Length: 69
Image 1 (cartoon, rainbow, N blue to C red):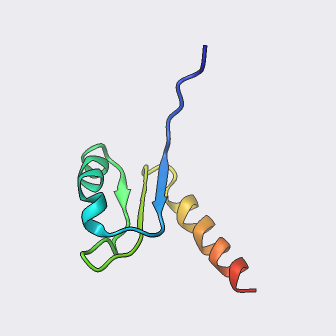
Image 2 (cartoon, rainbow, N blue to C red):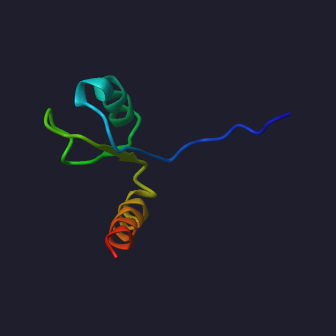
């Protein structure tokens, strides 16, 4: 029997805001923190639980930095 798994973070690097609007509302209502740049002009969405958001953002920044070198 498979164990139930839970996702604490999600990133969608290429989307239109209207594609994720319902998911954003659901995530916020469940207590997730959604990236502050999520507007109608956003092209990426980041959402994570309050417990992991800082680590998640740091990991993304490190990954972006490594990709540039």
